[in-house]
Length: 324
Image (cartoon, rainbow, N blue to C red; front, side, top):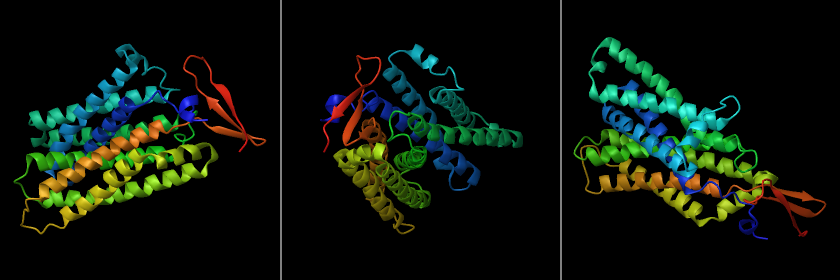
């Protein structure tokens, strides 16, 4: 019996929710890197400026996609209700606070002279610290939202938020690199080379985390089918693992190896291609995790029982499979 036919796979969340989770991660990751670079200081001003310009628009577009998936803005308002018992409500409040802080930071940094005075710098630092806290909350929430879904064992893992946080930092980092390469092609290569090395390190960390997640999912009977399904999915293996992680890792290392004082003609295309593929990999990761989420299969006395979701019924039914 094909799980796609009998409704075992969830089909409520697809590309729109994947794009929402992706853009939330990009915005939060870019802001985190930008704010940290602002504290580090010299030589990283460009990455800070680009990161601040990315954060709020990415979150805004992601929120629009979420509202589009909900179908009506009134549902978005209702989603903030009951924060004591709902992770959707908590996440709505976290993201809303983060959007306000990221916009405020951008406006003060770009359009005012607040940072030139000692008191203004202190205020900016306070906003940056609060923004980093809510940015981390936003990155983690995109994974916590899934791990709090008790009906899908593949999502119900403490590793999922870690995967999404690392992926958000990677995609945010790549988004900043694209902005820096696009608008500062004639500038010093040193900051981009440093970021290329940092990106390579983050990609390696993401590979280790995703492998740990898949191993843990495959080791659990309820989520094993989803783990096997995602590993059979060509979009995940080729699009994410090879093109979204492997190729960017190689290209970042090649970019880092460029000799100081030289600017080869291929440097910026290679850098932007690697960063673009890394961004696409982050989107594919979220989509693959969503569409491979399946209801658990129960094994009782040699028979397999699958909990089947039928959209027209108020509750799930039980599907009986013959013993293997």
